[in-house]
View 1: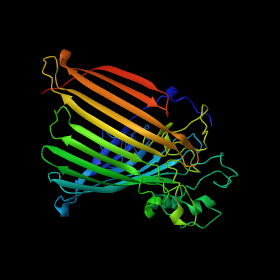
View 2: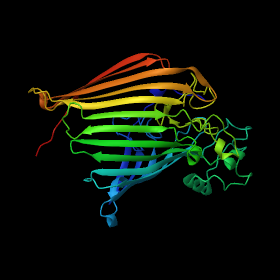
View 3: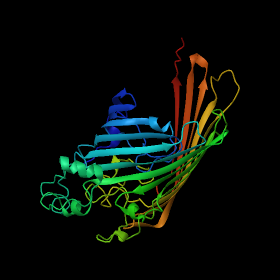
View 4: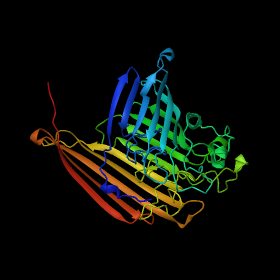
Length: 405
């Protein structure tokens, strides 16, 4: 597989059209999104869809915001999405498709002291064709993976047991599922303490059935945010997160014994070797990175060589109420500090483990000069044994036009 350097491509991160009708929204194109219960700005990113990769072109019908169900007097609200997308025409398997859906419920009204959240998101890579797996028994002889309307039903419902026709399906699809499935089942709670709001959440990971038997229940993304209900506070938000993907249901996978369906091998798949990635970036948490060789190959035979990680994360944001006539608003800042312990995979572990620190700091200074100018700057650092040590900075000056009646 020949891979063109990423920076030589002309990319449009966002380009879409949308329409609204009542509580529903329909859009087509690319749009930045995140799925899963988590903080929207300071988080390491949701496990399955973090916003780390370029958006995938798709058509999506959604209820984009939590909308009360009328007969519940606002006590029950729902939010959800249903989408069909298209991956790249190139890659290990060409012309693969995306099925995606999510559904979340909120118990409690906006003004209530306690609000409880729960729901799930489900992603599937399916369809496509390849010449790279011919003769392995993992794809039909013509290299085309299942993509009929009946297969779409199997993809949507996550069916595992209905396929017995060996002329239409390989043993891989008969004993597993059609497509590469993954996602998270999430729970969360918000507590309004007048001066502060607390937000706690947990994302439980699933990929091959281990979560159904609670084999990988140790794995997940845990978050706790303290928000001061004062938008001009020096420290408005503090977020603590802990991500664990090291268990994966244990080190043994044995077909026929559901209590030994471990070694989930997150973001990797025997058929879809491009894994859970798009345009050479991980779609899910960036702490499970892709492993590409210099010519676009997979030197470890899979998308990632490091999916057993522990991450400790601190995020903080706020503003400095500096009184100076040259400023049009308070100076705002944001910082993210992450420490990860990386163990490789069960089949190819890192010995010893590789530790990594990643830090980020940004600041925006809004000047009143010339009718409004924003000076923004950021700095980032990587230090450890997983990546090459590095330091980078960014600075920009932006003119802001404010319209007044």
